[in-house]
Image 1 (cartoon, one colour):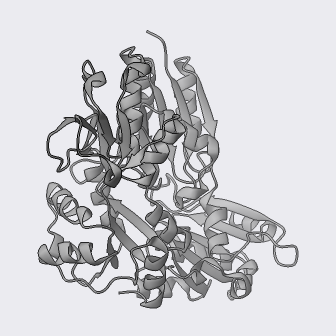
Image 2 (spheres, rainbow, N blue to C red; image 1 turned 45 degrees about the vertical axis):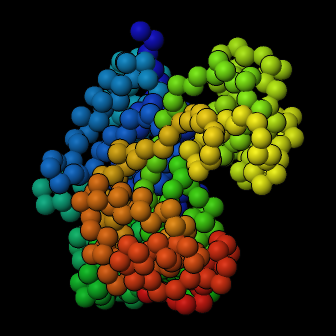
Length: 476
């Protein structure tokens, strides 16, 4: 059997748009993805429907996968001839153990590539309005692990060298050791008034910051309950934040939105809200299953109606696979929407809308079954709930603090509630104290019929109007 290949990929700091093009290409071609907690799960939605997803973080019913087990899995899956992606938060070369994984692959002569990512220690400060270097404030920068393999887990560092030689220091995952870090920096000569900032969930819409000095930051952390995942940044360059903070000024910053959806892909509505600074979790995740298509009698029809652009693509794919001469299809083509008509036009066919379809003649409907009398139906595919994403969604909910719920259509309500039931989540409990917004009157009626309370809806059912509504009416 042919040996596969492994891509050791940096997912970036959190915002899915910060992954590299090469990293995204690796995800899209992957047959297996082993991913960490700090890699944004939304990136997994760009993988193929049949990609195997393996979580390497801690689950309730077992301990975290040990590094040796991860190495073994990478080797095992690659030796099965598969394209494997190891997806890590930030950059794989910065406290990502990529060297150990690459060595295991090299030992078994498995080809691999390392794909750099944007490191959290640089990106999180920038999203907090802080460049880690500045010619007037900081000429040097260091990233430091804030926990190690010492007996008590406290970092064994060259404190004197850090204080004397580095202007800006980024400590990774060190909230528990913060008092120890501050004590040592002061003891080795760092002024007690040196600014310190903690950045939690950097680059996400849920990003939070806590500002202090080496003297008081530990007490502030205790008081606020700040926790990992956080970057601890120390240095005078933090003073620039007052002038150039930008992300936290975005109109939907702080919005943690749950978006019900009926489609497979990341939606334009989600993209619009993310671009304004919101965190968006889409649920449920669907996948398409192609069905066997019988086309022996396709030339017998007078009219063929396509219910979606996808049905156009799937129909012609089946025509080509079965070797059917397209000239034998004498039917007139129609589309239920302008998108379907455009999909036909791209293939060289001029089609009409459903309302222009004549009553007489034999009709074939391609796509979802609708309310058409005296028609035959050709269902080329069906959507099913992607069960691989149910535990992923549960973890996303646990880490988020949802304050907004958006139902974009009437059809999204029932499938959302059904999906929640599959996760063992009761919808009214989830949406307690959450602002519920509907895109239009039909979705409002569907939400009310489900026994839920809505808080409002935009003036028109467009993504632009939705964003304006969310901006205007603030957080829940």
